[in-house]
Length: 509
Image 1 (cartoon, rainbow, N blue to C red):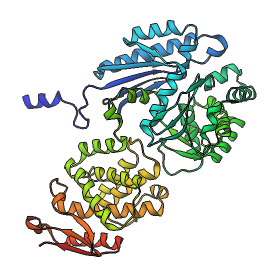
Image 2: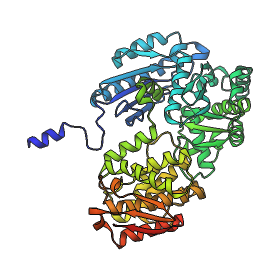
Image 3: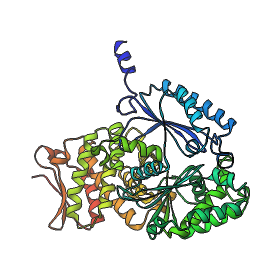
Image 4: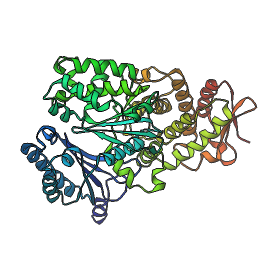
């Protein structure tokens, strides 16, 4: 009984021990949101996420005030959010507010009431600070971004230039969906004139030509979701969804011209978001025209994640979010986390000798796949490949694009299910180029050799190297490891050897 009580007081075994959970309360012009995270890391995992569309910025441009009914709705939501934080034993809460609260004359009174409820100080962000945090959010979730970040909220649009980890000074414009709807009296023609006037002559936009435009904000995500469903895109993960600039321009023109309710697949968009779609499309259309980017990329990470990123120490900020997330999952789900780490060095040696060229990005993805190779071991043997593939393809990974997700998922699928494509998801297959499929099959075959030798346990791979030498693919099983040799090991080595065009040899002496 005592042992059971001790176990019950610890963190659930499916969670990492980062200490007590932390939370961010984000009081935006359209939505009020609470996100509770497992801990403060470079790849924070939300354990609870809830939003309420309060519409605080609905009348601010025309009246200068936050509407009373919006205030009541927001304060009611904040009471629940505070109770949820208490229930989950959140130790630290950061609270921020944006355009509606900084622009409305009754914003300070609302903030004071909100602080009494939340029992924390609420930081009303300036436009420049909001742009900076949004940029940091994109940096935390997009691998080496290069372009213009645009965060479209209910009250404002923030624009800022990012390149790698460098963030330039940003600016804010009153072009949020609710603000445009309000100041134009719901006239799209008037809204278009306003957007043209506000975006005209902004010199920073010219610096984005030929680079990417990173779209942040709930209404732009809704617009992208509609595009995803209309085009039959095979993969329903919103983060890092890419649309060519030409396609984004044409789709935006369509959406702002017609009644949203008449659009094909409009049911995939929340009814409360639909009235703002035309305004979001209008702003995106004019930004694409002004910037001339190569593509539009959706980022689900923004100001909240940027705030957390700004709180990290320098060492933690330098960690790769993808590798960090894969390492966390390796720790939580693998039979031997050490084995996943050793598999990286083992495949490094193999790839270096194989003659196969590998870009730095492909190497990075291979390392992540090695860490994820054993996360499905608890599943039924017949379904380990399928379940691992689904977990990886749809997991909460950041700093990876959709083809990269396909590579990770396919590599681990092949490791479990063999090298045939018969049971492969056709939707996932659509994302994979010929090269991705080939490299995933090679890595999957290499992992099949490794796991047959080690049974998924650490401490073996460093003593049993596999490499190409003198035209042969050799696996060294010397000394006490010679007993691990057998037909199944050789057959798997032979499969890999066929893929790399080499003769398989097991060396036992």
